[in-house]
Image 1 (tube, rainbow, N blue to C red):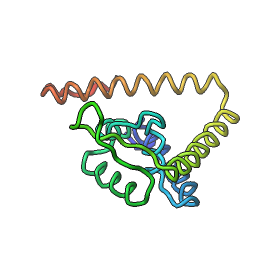
Image 2: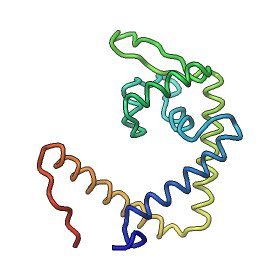
Image 3: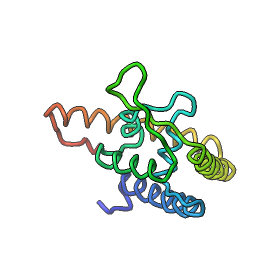
Image 4: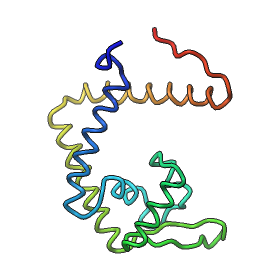
Length: 156
């Protein structure tokens, strides 16, 4: 099968293009796309438990620890021990973190508005449905693999 005929090629190709675009946009504000994603996923009022950020972004724990340390050193976040449970650390945005978050948010909104202007709603609805189905299938396959029941992926 040629790579251009595979679903994963197009998903990865599209994501890399989007990622390059977001990184180019973010670099104008002294951040990266990854930093923007972390900032966008921190609750402005309640903060966010550090353990919840990694899964939201698909980051491994080691990468997340390095990222949070870097964000804290840059003055974009602060960490606070949870008042109810001392085992947990909550991440809060600083004023500078909130400002960078708004810049990242603006970039995401601009991109999505551009897509919505150029691609008809009916096509986007189909796209979202297909992506939900793909994600569901991938999650089911991951569950089987983790349970030790790998099987050949159906190609029908």
